[in-house]
Amino acid sequence: MDTYDIFKQLTAGVRFTKKRAAPPSKPNTVNVAKETPQLKPVNKTVEDSDSGEDCSAADDFRLLADSGTGSAAADVPKRKKAKKQLSTEQAEQQQRAEEVSALRKQNLITVLGKDVPAPIRLFDDLSTGEYKLLPRLQENLLSYGFAQPTPIQMQALPVLLKDRALMACAPTGSGKTLAFLTPIINGLRTHKTTGLRALVLAPTRELAQQIYRECGELTRGTGLRTHFISKVSEARQQHGPECKQKYDILISTPNRVRFLLQQQPPLLDFKTIEWLVLDEADRLMEEGQNNFKEQLDDIYGACTHPQKRVAFFSATYTVPVAKWALRHLKNLVRITIGVQNSATDTVKQELLFVGSESGKLLAVREMVRQGLQPPVLVFVQSKDRAKQLFEELLYDGINVDVIHAERTQHQRDNCVRAFREGHIWVLICTELMGRGIDFKGVNLVINYDFPPSKISYIHRIGRTGRAGRPGRAVTFFTQDDTANLRSIAQIIKNSGGEVPEYMLQMKKVRKSEAKMRSKKPLDREDITTKIRAETPKNFVKLQKIEKAEKVLKQRNKTNKTEKSSINKSKKLAKVKDQIKGQAGSANGKVKKQKISK
Ligand SMILES: Nc1ncnc2c1ncn2[C@@H]1O[C@H](COP(=O)(O)OP(=O)(O)OP(=O)(O)O)[C@@H](O)[C@H]1O
Image 1: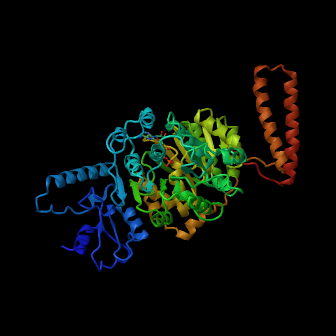
Image 2: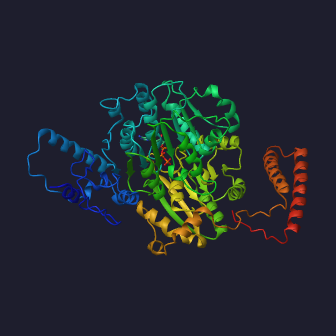
Image 3: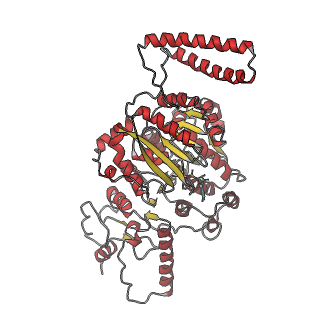
């Protein structure tokens, strides 16, 4: 039987949608994952006889996408066992391969690449045998008290501990952070003064800070030093030449890193970087203005270490990212948990038609009236709308706050902390908090504004239903949102949710239109129901007056006789009417929409 026959046999059941590679003209090696003699199509990388390159990115990517559920061994037709008697060693290898295949299938782990290491079952598997995890790291890992590794940890940990390049796709809230931090820390072992040896990039400062905190917990007692660039202004003195030896691991966002790289002389030196990890990799590799791809190219170019390991992590991937990884990363392993680009199945997902923009406010107030289960995250599409919704809900007696890029870092930090500590029950946010942020126990996500894409939808609702806990997501939609409705409805259906059949039958929106919508959100009617003060200055004044009135009202309740505070209330009311009077006449007859409480 020559190689071509083996190739035919091995690829039985595999669908190549592109034109099939010409049958190898001369014998070539067909590389199959050693642990699975009965080949699973997604486990194989067929070397092309001419270039010696793996099969094309698109085929490869489609293979991964097609493999869909669990270990693809399930789809490969049972093949007759080879007649000849297997030697004991071969029988053991076969047995081991079947166990690995069963474990992957049970955890919906799909792998693609050569000689992919077997998944672990328990964290303890890392301290014995071939991995021998740093004892202190093992201790820190076990101190979390997790019963067992999540599927992505089961497979990604061995792969990264074997220094392989990795592209990992796993549902939101499934423990990807631990999956990439553990191998980095194990690889670096302890502090050295040779300069930065690991770089972890995340798309937002809040997510980078969260990873930094988790890294601090995992490196406790190892001597390793981790740095997070909180303020670029401070970074200058923190990153002068003398302190290059100060840190081992840097966690940051691409724009801060590139800014320091571009200083003359550069304030960062990445020649010694042995680990480069991109969290939310598809977001980091988005092209276009104010996206990260350009910054990433500069950073990747500065990491010149010949043996650097590169790992991408995200709950969603796009073909360009997969192609880039296949082109640039040698001996790449691809891991998918469950079905690629799908929503986590721990979230009960609902679509709610609210008629019009003003209907959304009614819907939120109705949910509040029925009793919300805090903590709740409310996503809107822009910072202006976040401010407007905040102003509306502020006086509804809800513990609400708002976070967006226009707030100072100090305000953002306080807001995140207050939400994490339960002082804030409802946090209004934009896409800034849409990815990666791990708020423990968020019970409900409300998509007040329809998500700009299915990728955004998957990440937004992934702020709840984390680490296996149940969650709930309600997505408001109006007539204007029907273009994207079908794709979101399909995501909900694919993750086990109920959707009306008509939504799945709706016309598919063209890729170009979907792309345009994901970049430029819909122009929506203002949320605010108040007559807006003519000038921002007045608007701020109004806000302050209303806050002062609220405090005085509280005080008047307690001591009625307090003359001064009653006079003060009267004075405030007078100033407020003057401002509104100005605004009212200047704005013409802006009808005040009465929203019933
Ligand atoms: N093995 C485990 N068992 C249970 N919980 C875990 C395990 N590993 C991590 N977690 C917890 O799961 C939560 C989510 O982890 P993490 O933030 O790393 O998820 P993620 O996959 O990165 O999510 P996202 O895609 O939203 O970024 C965290 O609170 C983390 O402590």
